[in-house]
Amino acid sequence: MYSQYLCQFAQVHEQFRIPELMSVSELHGFNIELPDDMDVTRPFMILGLESDEHARILTQRCILVKSICEFYARGKTYEELHMQTRADPSKWARYVENTSFKMKVTAYNHSIPQTRARDVVEDFSYMGMLGKIDMIQPEITFVCYEEYVDKHGTTREKHEGDGEFREVFFGRLIDEGSARRLVKSFDVKKRKYYGNTSMEAEISLLMANQTLASPGMLIYDPFVGTGSMAYTTAHFGALFFGSDIDGRQMRGKAESPGIIRAAAQYGVDKRIIDLCTFDVTQNPWRCGEMFDAIVTDPPYGIRAGAKRLGRKARPSGAPPRTVAPRSESRPDDQPYIPPTKPYELSALATDLILLSRYLLRHNGRLVFFLPTVTDEYEEVDVQTMLCEGMEVVANSLQDFGSWGRRLITIRKTSSEKYAPPTFEPEGRRLELEKADVASKHVPAHKDFRMKYFKKFNKEDYVA
Amino acid sequence: MVRLITHNLLACHAKGCTTNNFPLQFKDVSIELREAELNPDFIKGFLPRIEWKALVDAARQLGDTTLPSEMPEMVDDEFLKNLHHVLLEMHVEEGAMICPNCSHVYAISNGIPNMLLAEHEIA
Ligand SMILES: C[S@@+](CC[C@H](N)C(=O)[O-])C[C@H]1O[C@@H](n2cnc3c(N)ncnc32)[C@H](O)[C@@H]1O
Ligand SMILES: [Zn+2]
Image (cartoon, protein in one colour):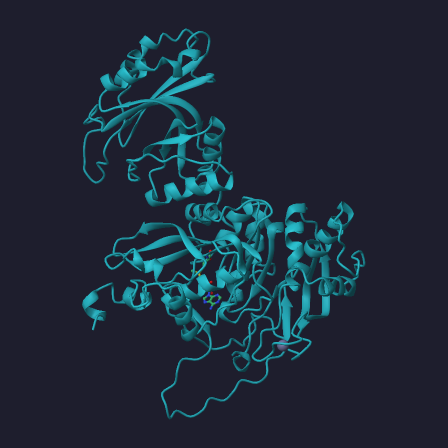
């Protein structure tokens, strides 16, 4: 049996809200009933939950949840709100006799003048609350939220438009979100080790929630860089494995590896199983089905170049290259750096999914960012890189204007064993054909690097 | 670090090196023991992935003889603790891992193994 709860979201990352709720509820094995008229752009949403306990699990784990209330009423006007509240006293009657309480009146996108807030409280006097008012440690808190439309970018007086809200909501507070605090604790600037590829804290936390990170899980980042997602997934209890083609990214300058130093700051260094230097397209994994999740921000050629071992194709007739002498035992910060060639984004994305299908256990998740061109993106783009046995669970846009990046969550639905990918065009083509996806469709993320440097001006790159 | 769990998962991947390329042989290693939190579910879940002989040999080479030569059928607490110790608490800090087939040397420095191949070794 579902009861109605009022969820208030943080004012950011709209498209990440529902996937996060769904991931956390899946991790804890309960269901959420979403409203039929769901509008993710609004900060309030009525959710169906089976218990207050489930609401508390969400407030304790979801980065984007600010609070959850037991839902009492909503209205375009206060008359409507009061009518509904009076109509169903069974929800609050048990608190009337002898429960200390306080009432909070607040607004979203607006600040309510104190005098009116007091009047609003007065207007609830018909509830006949007999317990004492306790502003410090009440047994229960009633909350009244007024939702105003975003007047961002316009100038106005402080309380201008007061009372002209879009809708008002009323309920009993279950819990305020406590996971949002982590955004500060994981602040990149306060980290002992970071670089120009480090992922902002809030997004690293959202990514960790998409992996369902929890104790006993083994999680892998094949483009680990400075390790941003290592800290957040390990914080939630997972064991973590990272690799990168460039050892200096993981290590930094000091003797002990930078990622380990930063992990120690968060008390999770023991959960970093190991860090290895290798090109993911030439990887040393002995077998598949080892990881519970793969989480990564692949290189897409702007800050951190997408590259792989090998040399660029040479014009025909060019003299043969001399082969490098046999490598001796050599740490990766020594002078020999093998030549690399560029790695086009749509090929990389397909390879990443094929690799994940090989390395993930059944039901394991791949969580990664795919940059894309806003004007050209189509729903089918993500399908063009899917192979058999893998299914998209969530796809959330972080919008930067002319381009954006999509956090894609994919689940390995198949329990079959798969071969490792070939990392070559022919292998990719065969797999995509098998999956029967629209293989003729050219996704907007193809040649993303080139498009980025042409400032997404279509005339410059469409023949 | 190169814990033994990692060692058990890495094979030589140089061009054409596809047989007898596992396990890599430790050479000139220095070891550190560091306590790690025990999660029995993780260890049990990982058991089917382990190449048992490779693990036991590596542990013995590094001085730990607590594991039986055959993977036991019954998993008791004592065994879990020993296995946890071998998989997660023994760290190889310096030294190298060498391919038994092609003799490629994978160096380990400050706990990070360099598994990167040189140009002539890639497929
Ligand atoms: C966008 S960055 C990842 C940043 C990381 N999330 C962090 O917090 O710093 C991409 C990383 O991929 C690495 N990389 C590029 N090509 C690679 C390849 N073929 N194999 C493995 N790593 C690669 C780069 O060295 C870089 O560190
Ligand atoms: Zn070899």
